[in-house]
Image (cartoon, rainbow, N blue to C red):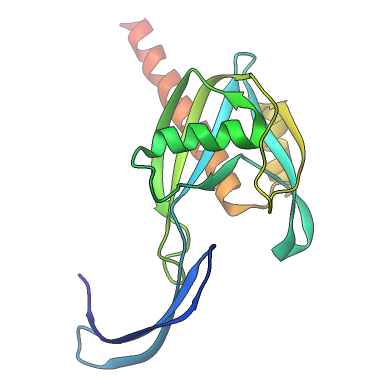
Length: 191
């Protein structure tokens, strides 16, 4: 249930995000004088799996943490894109050069509900195949696109070599999704 906004002002607004400062009345009547929110576009995170059951990962430089990170392909859903599945397919193709035969949304979550307003949409893609060279945005610095086995991916998670929270979540959600499918198939085969 939304609370009464008393005052809202934009502190910063650029091409990547907007920061607002709100004063609002809580349900009990008390007033929060300064609450800052970062507004960013929705994001698509894609766990793309090849026919060999390998996951597509990217190695890229991330300036905020001044480090090279292992991640799932991901990106913003553009304002004009109404179909987030198609946006996920576009992001996968742009960042990796891979396309998938089937893309399924497996969950939507908030990026960080106490700080940011945007959602993260997690997808799993099947039968990923390299069809062209990546087409990176100006701010992207992807050093490598590669496919790795599931057990190796889980090992990278356990060794904390994949640190990006959206990538960690996306991998674990995809793993859970596949386990549910396999469990359902096993039940059907027993019937």
